[in-house]
Length: 337
Ligand SMILES: Nc1ncnc2c1ncn2[C@@H]1O[C@H](COP(=O)(O)OP(=O)(O)OP(=O)(O)O)[C@@H](O)[C@H]1O
Image (cartoon, rainbow, N blue to C red):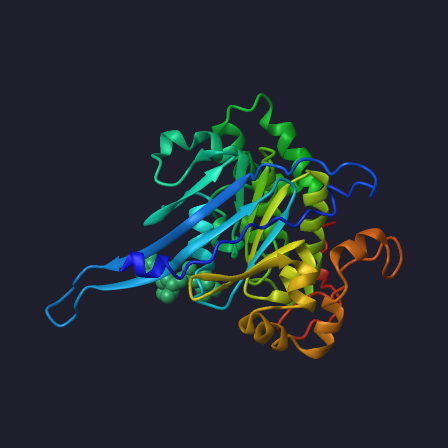
């Protein structure tokens, strides 16, 4: 059965260059292609449910079906798909929090799939995750200082306290935030804490799992802006998972479209948006309300270059990608001072 599925597998390599890496002049010889930082090959994940009663036979869910792609250093790689398409499953595999039923995943050429935890220590600092819901990802009994310091202590950082202060400032939180507990913050601020914790050990890869979808619409733009700024500042490789193509389009330079556990299309964000090849991608684009579609035509690169709305153009709440109404001003709640 696995073989039958494999034969339907398409292989993609996300090879779009990032804006950050820039392009050589037409006369210069092109630089050698970068080695992928993440390499996913023919990955399947089958969830097997044991028989729980005489009347309930064992069942299987084939959540990923032969997924293959590369993520290059510095790339902002978006994975988009509807609910149940396998995004969270794929994300857990990329972070080695779960392992494929078959296929391989490598981080800088070192296999991380199917490895015991003791062989994954090198990965834990270098790849960090921001989860969807900051309320459930932050321990309510711990002060922010200890939450953010956790990965630093694990790696025996020489001065966790000063690194905590530094990274809290990087995410726009006041210094006294360190003494408080997660419930004393707004949703947007809690996501800033989660981002601070992820960035504290200075990872090379940041994986973000629907990082704004649990947030109030009025603070989503602020968190997206913060993430894109920090990706630049920390020279991160970003893997960004979302069910909203318009969000992915804003944040990422490369987009992979996942449907029923298969990658149906991978391309530059502009290609996917302007010339989608797969009918499913076209349906995702058609599902973006018209105004959003026009705004989604503005690339993050345009914004960064100041080609739209001046040099300091930002995602505004009214243009921030969302499913819902986004025209309300940024809430006072998320002001950090
Ligand atoms: N632990 C599990 N046991 C059994 N089936 C699972 C498990 N986790 C996920 N699935 C199934 O695998 C498929 C893919 O689920 P997954 O959560 O990866 O999708 P998703 O795209 O992240 O969805 P959502 O956006 O709703 O979170 C679904 O059919 C889901 O029911």
